[in-house]
Image (cartoon, rainbow, N blue to C red; front, top):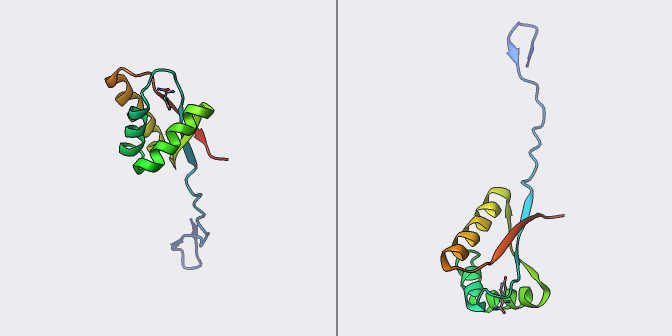
Length: 103
Ligand code: TYC
C-alpha cells in the first residue's frame, strides 16, 4: 500500500503470481501377503481406475516392487495414502503406500 497525491491509500498494481500446487505421486509398494484382488479393488475404488488399468498397475507393482497409483496435490495425496492404510488394516493386509513429490 502507498499514498497518492490526494492522500488516499492506493494499492500498487503488482502482478500476483500464484504458483501452481506441487504435485505428489501416491506410490504403492509390493508385499508378499496382500491378495492381488484386494490391490485391484483399492486401485478401482480409491484411485478411480477401471479394472483393466487397475490390473496392469497391480501387476507392475508385483513385478517391480512399486508403482504409481495417481498424482495429486499434497492434501489429496496424503488422504489417499491414509485411505489405503485404513482399508488394508481393516482387511488385515500389510499393503503400504507412500507420497513422493513429482520432479
Ligand atoms: N505380491 C502380492 C501377491 O503376490 C500382490 C501385490 C501386488 C501386493 C501389489 C501388493 O502393492 C501390491 N499376492
